[in-house]
Amino acid sequence: MQEESSRTRKKSSNVVWHQTGISKQDREKRNGHRGIVLWLTGLPSSGKSTIATELQAQVFEKGCQVYILDGDNIRHGLNGDLGFSPQDREENIRRIGEVAKLFADSGFIAMTSFISPYRKDRNRARSLMKEGEFIEVFVKTDVSECERRDPKGLYKKARSGQIPEFTGISAPYEEPQSPEITVDTEKHSKEECAKIILDYLMEKNIIQC
Image (cartoon, rainbow, N blue to C red; front, top):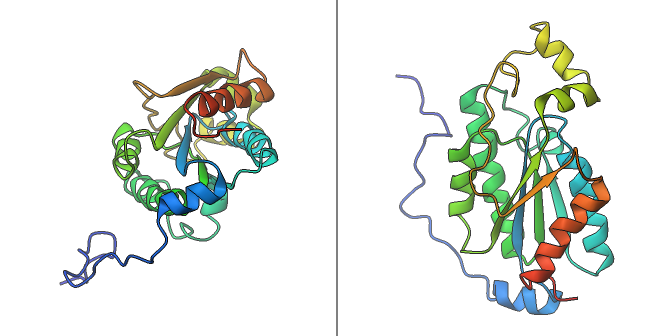
């Protein structure tokens, strides 16, 4: 019988969560802001990473602890063993959801920039967080505009069959049904999109300066 995959293996019943003595609230108090997950989702080339980078600069300038977990960067290391099949995409998002939760628990504003095409996977990431700690940001861009931008030439390769399971062409993208924030990159610049998100964080007292 083939050895059970680590992705499906259940954790040992002897594994328990270890309390380390400093709470999330302690860290938030020192940082001067709440620890949350900002989950940017959208089609390839929709502008997720561009907006995340701009927003990170604005938030960092305010003295906040912030870090971007970017889709391409994560696949260089932590998720370097995963492909782009539906099963691997699911595992990709499962892992990053857990990592983002740890960042938020450390008091950081964790920003994730992933296509994360399936609602159930995004909802599972949301379920790891308390109410109000997971903020889904839909980076709305029409597929034709994404294809026009196409900085990596991926849409062209997908159209020619060189890239199978490409989101928006040969694999589905399920738009968020009720995201906390929607930014339309065809109507707003990266700076304007970042400000929309920043204004939300300040309105909700996540950032208080």
